[in-house]
Image (tube, rainbow, N blue to C red):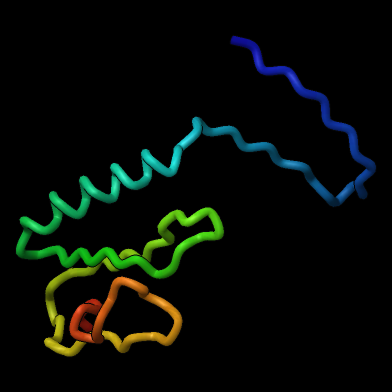
Length: 99
């Protein structure tokens, strides 16, 4: 497999152009990975993992807020519910615990 591209731009001597390449990480891959973390980390006593639907994209894809923390010093108080966010969350009791 060959990757060939040309790049031509007028820049000052102090400016640099950088290129990065990575393999595609699809929305499905992301959801599968989050499912794995949710299942795996929910079985531990020392790591707190909370996954919430923050909002939907214009393509109706989930944009999620992930909270990962130690359970040390975690309180029984929940984060506040934010207006126009978290469409699946019914009350602040469903939000993550605060530290």
